Length: 326
Image 1 (cartoon, rainbow, N blue to C red):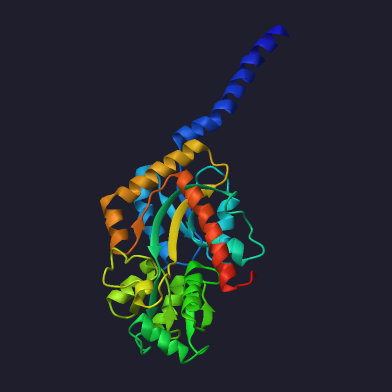
Image 2 (image 1 turned 90 degrees about the horizontal axis):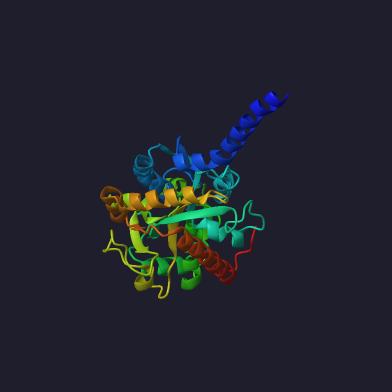
């Protein structure tokens, strides 16, 4: 009997040691398989473009493939919920978008708490939207559009990436400050809205500069102004909306990488380091800047504070504009 006890005890101790060191070993070896980067919007939008710019280089630095997965719908809440409910092991990440901060003010029921259910890793970029029109619309400036729309209240449609998205609120803020009335036509992502804009089915939109700039350059869309306080580095010839006719106007979009809450700190630290390294890579940085985006690479703590501030800011904007939560 004593001999059996002596034989069993070492096995028990070994099992306990494995159980205790297993998670730590997993964190040390992370990552050992491909990583999902969930984009909560349709292909072709600024979030999707940014994710696909950084994913290959990020995967190279991590030593595992980073797979971009589009999960659009419900004002980006479907993709957000996928990540919020995922295992906190670093293998499912979210390419967060401004709607994380906007949705609490736009919807009565959001399936996650953006400030509690995610672990911020880093803000990736800040970028303006761009007020664009179909060339058939007889306007060539912000002032032209204001005059044209004031003469036709409620007769002009504008597209957006969906109700409550940053492009939607950017346009609503513009209309409010300019004293205009247009009809909102929401789409399931900027990409789909831009397709109808290019076809002339809707004449006006404020998509992200990443989405719209290629069509501005080939003259399939006409750019009237960027939504940032300063002109975008990649498009210095396009004025800001503020300087072109609506003083004080500003509405900037952002994207950033987040993990599910509870993700171990060593994994967050590793991911943050490689995201920043990716943004510093010359080819990635140059492409983002050329497309009008400003690479950021903030710390997890800075990104968390930024997200809290954005949530407060957009709650006030929604209230001031008079949009009722759905």
